[in-house]
Length: 132
Image (cartoon, rainbow, N blue to C red; front, side):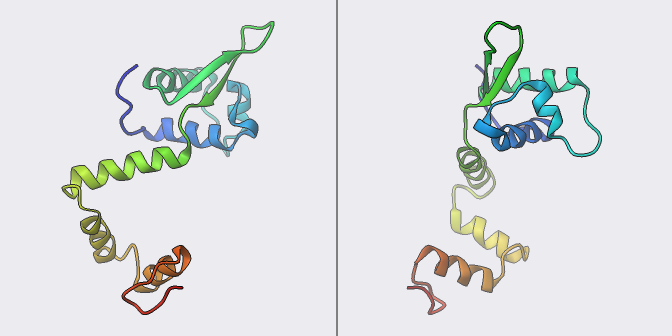
């Protein structure tokens, strides 16, 4: 198994589909059914799925009595989000979460009202005088 790293756009699209499937398991045909609009070729999905298997993000099982494989994720969406955000924090912000948040505020990705709402939502007391 290779180092997992960050997913490509095509890999991420397949992982989002796997996470949304009933029981988070599906064959390539079931995965293709979840694509909106123009669907990629069966072989394209099979190739990307093979990459996800090699990277350790997904696994497969054979359907009993067939040659058909059913795929499922080995990491949750939340586990992947933590991995990506930690990589961004460590690689771009010298491991500083406050530098990452400051960047998001400077870029206007997060407003003061968003921050207040986050503090209230998490039950934390904030410098804004809100919280529980």
